[in-house]
Image (cartoon, rainbow, N blue to C red; front, side, top):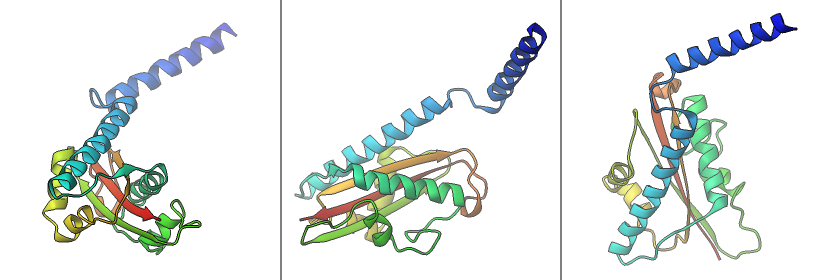
Amino acid sequence: MARRAAGFIALVISALGLWAIATPAGATPAHRASATHALEQGVLNNMNAFRREHGLAPLRLSTALTAAARKHSADMATRGYFSHTSAGGTSFDRRIARFYPMGNKRFWSVGENLLWSSPDVDASRALDMWINSPEHKRNMLTARWKEIGLAAVHVPSAPGTYGGREVTIVTADFGVRR
């Protein structure tokens, strides 16, 4: 039993040693999660400031839209594509409706902004990229939006479109139901 325990401890120490070698300093999962959360919060704050500058109401964070955005960002990172259409061919509005349904409301509308950056992007740069794209800027300045879902996903090596690079993918899903 003592021999088995010693072997197990050696295995754990070896695994921890490999993890330390393969993980850049400061890039622990907790650190990365904290950084993506800070990016999401910064994008929300900056976007609402941008909307206020243009006389528009700020957007409320929606857990349903955030769940849709998080699923899409993670799917793009895992499968290596970058598109509003899902990997299976579902349009963005139908994909979002799974998380943010019309329910008993009379009006429902959604929009989406995407971006990816290699390796990192901060909230100011994310907003600048969208401002410099007429379609994305129009989405941010759409008066009818009342809610937003934001999700940033960071992966050390994304396949497909991303060429194995370290990337951060951000999805912003806009919506209104009334």
